[in-house]
Image 1: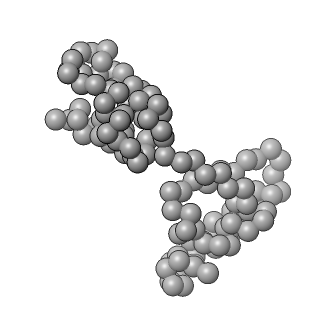
Image 2: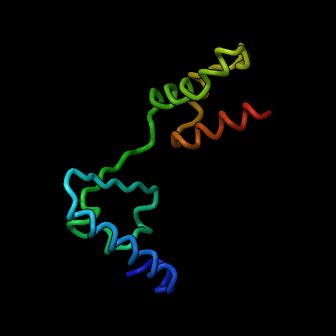
Image 3: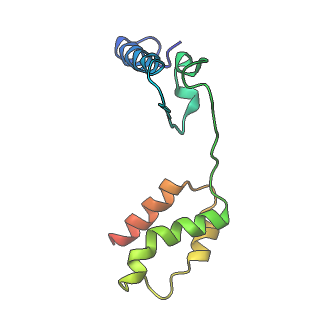
Length: 114
């Protein structure tokens, strides 16, 4: 069933997506990847065998991963001298438990715009 209670717009979008996915079967060497942070909101028809049937959960980054994400997103700030000497990437990684990579990127963007 549909998540939004069967609204016409949602049904139309899901049906269009299903038609596109079903059309991929006739093509060779095509890998279709869908990503979401809300699997519970995906119409069950999309998850049936032959469509988006393999599910790989990618959890939140651990502290080491968060440290690496902060380093990636602050690299240019460090290279151009915009990152204060009092900023501790390991500390930031420690205090951002349960943050996704996108949320960490947002923290860095927000800090950079201050």
